[in-house]
Amino acid sequence: MAKYVGSWWIKDGIDGRRLEAEGFASTLGGLAEFDWTQNHGESDVKQSDFVTTTNVTQRSDTVDAMQMSSHGWTDGFLVWGGDVTTSEAVDFGKNDLEVFATHACDLLHHSSDNSVGRWIPAFQRLHYMLGFHNSSYSGGGQNSRGTWFAMYAAWLYYWSGSWLFRVDIPLREAWAEANEIVEGSNVQWAYLRAQTPDAPTYNERLRAAETTDPVSGRSFMTARGTC
Image 1: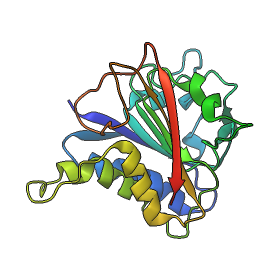
Image 2: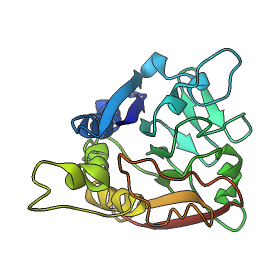
Image 3: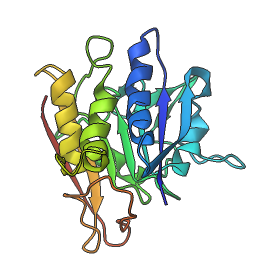
Image 4: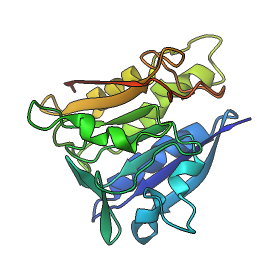
């Protein structure tokens, strides 16, 4: 069975933000192992896509992996006409979502006085949040961020020429590699991941096969690096 992927984007006058998110989903959607099933932009990016809302399907949780382009800060990110913050009923991975990637600035900022652990309550069965420790950019060469991420994470593993050349690296490395290509050295990529003894995620790949969700007895790890 194919894994489902999705894209969410708010352009705010920069079409590159759409290209980043759609590049991730469309690149994977071109493989037999993945289906691009959700694509939402501008006014169709709703708070209920990410926050538990009575009688509303949480669309982000109908995919296994997604990339989102929007503005952000340490405690939240923007949706159309509102925001999603750490104070909301955010439960990523209630059903399917395993990988949440976004270029929202500062979302995964981590310091002694503002721990990235503020996002831990948002993890239901989510494996990875991938983002940035500080500001990231759009429209100045970053259009291919999502494409590069998808290529390193899975496309170059499954592509038709994999018998000749194959890339097999963890999600965290794929995110780092993609951002090292498109961002300047003043930008720091980051991630927050959950793990359990029976679901180690440090070396987790984005593959068609289902992986064990980190649920019981979890610990959380974060890291960041220079692009």
